[in-house]
Length: 389
Figure 1 (tube, rainbow, N blue to C red):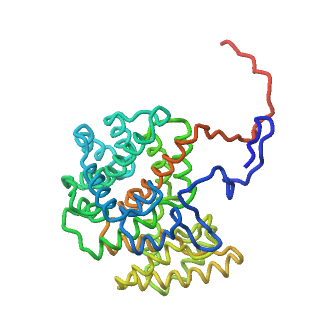
Figure 2 (figure 1 turned 60 degrees about the vertical axis):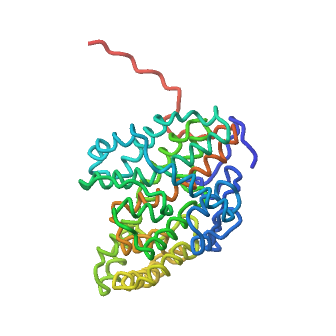
């Protein structure tokens, strides 16, 4: 893509929709096809057939590991799960300070503290091996931080990580303090894998912008977490489930959806800025939910069917389908996760994609510095005289 000179800016769509800002080898989203991939593999197929550590390795190294490589990688990352004493000792205060905001707010401060405690240096000043080491340490620590902040916020003591458990199983164990059910582990692992990366979404782009300044890895991830916390990005899974609660019963589906669409309100769990077909992540998660079965799943399927029909009627030509948040909330609810941990769980997966993007962006020394069109009062205006009293 040609680079504009400062005096010859390039006009782009609002929100940078569809604008290519760089090249990546990490993956892509093909919205018109309803397909996305990590490296050279279908992300959904990876979620269905591989472990979280397999895909983490793929994102960092460009190839799936063999058995020996996977065992070594699991041992390497599991050893990084415990928190430094300086970080662990600060968590009770962070949990109290963020009692209303929840674990994701505490994570922003905890990541900053983790980076400072570990002596993270600017990415610009360190080599690729040091960047990778910082990224692995942070990714491994994020589930420990999130579950500890949640439990402290509930008046419970944090649960120490177990190196004998896989990434997803250990996350559920630290969250509940109980041996995780294999069926739930597999459901959550599939969800985590499916949300590791998803093109240049708002949080990933934020991470790469900060990386382009040469900042340390913790700073890049703090910015990404801030972007993810917004209800129009990662803050949506629990809100999509709130929609099901608000509708309540099948006989209220049509009236509830119609009323909100006609008022111009957004229906959480429907629509996506890239997909013009069904979100492939939702298709997979619907299948997982249907394996559990039960009234919640049956109701969710009914709401999906009627809502899509009503949206097609009321917003013709818009192609509004369910997105990942709709069934993500259902699956996490079925697996016993508290709703305040839905978005943090998303974060526990996406931190791998952010970090892979950070490592890729760190190889490019060009700072990301777009332009804006000024639309305020025409300058220069004369300064008003100072009236002395």
